[in-house]
Length: 398
Picture 1: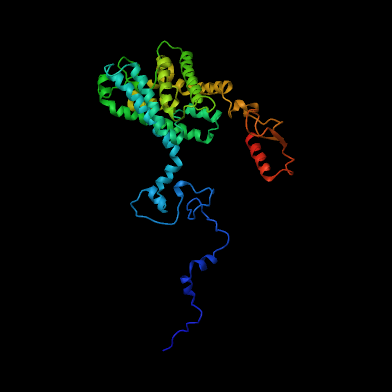
Picture 2: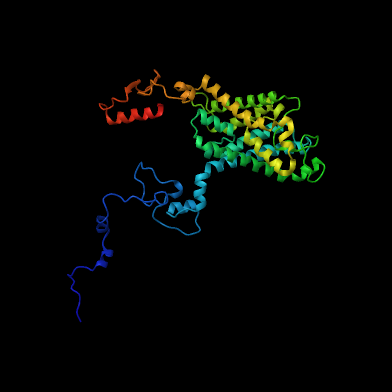
């Protein structure tokens, strides 16, 4: 019997027994780029490095199948398909949840007051209920999506506060769907009371003495002209937007974490001052979503023709009012970044600024360096960091 020579070279399989230093020495000097970085991320990020999105950040490890997605992510396991969907749609879901909460409380308090024939509340109860509805809705959605709850507010933020335009359509759809669902919740809860109030099971009417269509959306007083209808919604929406911009202005008197409470008083006050004529909708989603539901629930075409075809007023007037209110506030009070504070209202580039970039500040009381203007074509003599600063400012102002 022969024995292997202990001094003979190790067979190839012995490479698996090599120590960590030996293995590391065989790795390439430059890290191999992940061909699909959107799906896996196995290495820990370097300090200051942008990591993968939270829902796909995976590190080495494992865990039991029953653990939650947060625990799985912490232990390095891939998260579920639903958590990926939730990550991509979290802001629209937030607006949906917020508007659903708002309508559940708002239409709910109207239904309780009307269907009880005033024994369980009055008009002031409705104002209180709507103020609380908006406050709770902002608590539900404000930390995720900003708690817009209103397409007109979203549009004003796109125009005056650089809110991404690409988010406007999905916010609008989510807000309308949330209001539709909120109306469905109120209808399901009060269906028997609606039958009793209307006078027959399944009877649904608009514009009569015992009609209940007004539980879900707004209808104008019969004496109002179409101009009066529009002006009422326009005025209330403009005031709403001016106050919203004011409580969010860091150079004025910001509400901070008391914003939802301030909104409660805003809605309550608007209801007390401007609610009689049209019901102070001030919101396409708040009116159109529940109106669409009432049509689907059997109230018929009267929901579109009542009040001299009033339905389009709360869809259009809030947009005009919020844009006007935002414009007035920015023209008279706001000193931050807004189209009214940019050359040519930010609509086109000024020929003067198209060749120069400004670094510094124009405020003489500021601690920052004074304004320095450089021709963009003469940057070669500057330090590299200064070049980057100037180019960054140029990107912002060009």
